[in-house]
Length: 334
Image (cartoon, rainbow, N blue to C red; front, side, top):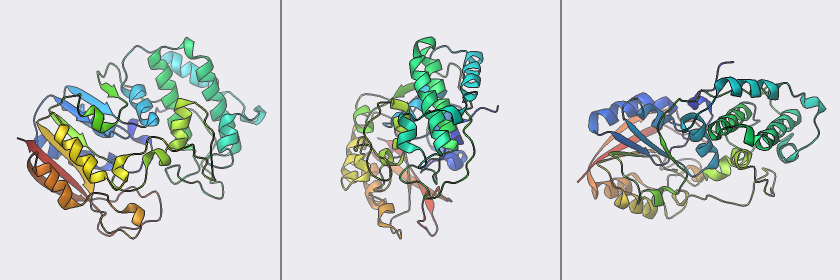
């Protein structure tokens, strides 16, 4: 089986298609040995940065993203042979013989077919029950492999804010391993970006915050739930838990949160990704910080240049944009 690469997740705002452009500009306008990705999402920018910087720091406040970093980039020994053997055993489980579990009663015939949900839930229970058999790294690799495999057959457009009313044919669940890095040396954090900014230092800091009112914790609650396995009570048609990890960058105070972040950064260069969704057809897609506000805050920290690129964004819904562009602000800190 070909293992999952880091970029194989469907993810709102993913920079997977912009990596070459971002890397080219970062290398042209910055210098140093260390790179901090504060809102790392899938982690693809940090992975690309590892080709050019000797020290990588990666952070995100979603449990599902943190699990990706631990699986792909984490420290500690692991046996690929042992992981492949365990995944082979999991794949032998006959979903038609399984009864219900937390995952299937929560998401079966909704985000997943009932048989897929029963098998995913059964494997998650087994990983937890067999946890003592694995090293910490092996545990994270298995969790991450399960998450990527589950996402592959999810009955959604790419996030978990809603599911298709009719079950789509995304195939029968089959677990595959991830392409875990060996001894990457990444420093991995699972913290609020504004708090972390006050405690870490890096030559280059990359910032790709949420742009609009759509909360990522509400988009990826199913995967977060699969990772934490705390089995909370769920509500509504979309089977969401009580709100947690609600980002200030998706609220009216986004500008103030961004200003606080920039003022507290200890670095030589700041690189900010943002797009031009300032007047969309959908109000929920409207950016919380304007172009001028971003520039004003960054210019107060240092000399800032801007670059932009036409970009066919990942649109998980029906919202349409004309001339969608991605901006890159690059600040040389005074």
